[in-house]
Amino acid sequence: MAKSAKKHSKNYPDAGTPPLHLGDGRRSGQGSVPRKRKGSGAAARSQSAELHYFNARARIYARLAQLPRGTVKERLISGRKYYYLQRREGKKVVHTYLGKEIPGDIKKDLEERESLRRELENIQKIIRPFVAAQIGKML
Image (cartoon, rainbow, N blue to C red):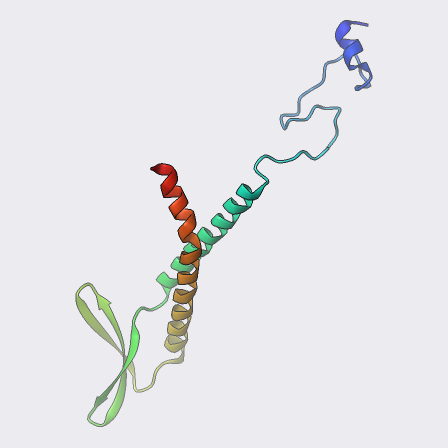
């Protein structure tokens, strides 16, 4: 036997061939032994939490873009109540007529918008330290 064959004879059944590398840090004779992943400590958990909150923020922004903006205002004209959706476009305040009653879908969408805004505020408070840490790394 050659010198390299003796070296590998007890670990490999085909002792005449050197081990093949599988590209993931294992050799062909080692089987599927799980290896400790790099970055599996607190830093990796922090990064996954950070990613989770950034993704949640992006989903909230996307949903807020689909919902109507503004508030419902009631006007009393000639003794009758009329409802308008009031919002700001640039410097102008725009009123869109809704009808003599508030449509249920508009009311539901505005309530959803308000709850998403509160959730976004909470996420922003959580994300703030992550962003500050990134800015500190850049400086």
